[in-house]
Image 1 (cartoon, one colour):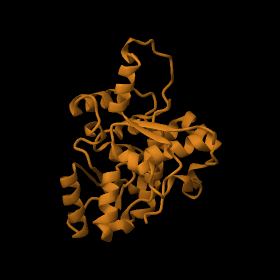
Image 2: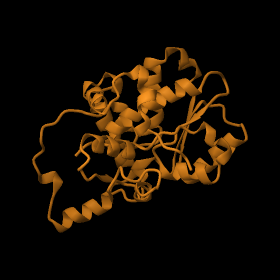
Image 3: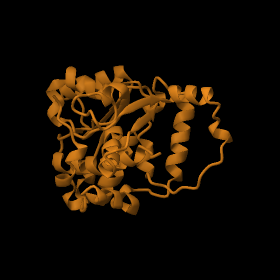
Image 4: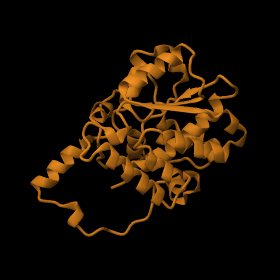
Length: 262
């Protein structure tokens, strides 16, 4: 079992590099695209004029699946989360092969009930942190922005003054923001959107309230021993095992974390 937040950490690095390459002056902006299938579909089908400003990154789910299969091609990968749209994303022709099955939290809960498995009554196994604070924050609205900012602030000091962000959640708010973007009414340089209210913690197949989910996410994120993923020796070792050996050359070596919007 692996936290998908580890995939988020990889993409935080990638998005920071994309920002550095994409934003050079006031008025430039980048649309971070990879987390939410609803956000991506709105861009692809409705707001096509601003597609050139969309980052080509895959989602953390796809990134983590590709990492796992790069390390062991015989493994079957099951993604578990609160999102129904991830089921269709896993079958997307551009992305197929990274994820074999998608189960929701609700489905896992039913499986546990049928098999009489009570996770809270099981003894935990000792483990170490693999994911960073920012990677875990992806589960709630605004988390992607915070994670990417931390890396921009750390790696690209000259771009800090150009980093201004806006994030929205909920389909109507996403639509309104994208419309304003097309009309040139938004001044931010880093744009984040999530289709569900509150982000993934407000997904359609959650089994606790959005508020409780957000609180849990914040608690786990703050508890991580890794604050910025570029400081994680575990992550750097994993990247090395899949052929990414130098952050300075990350952009040239990370094609497995990119997609083409067709």
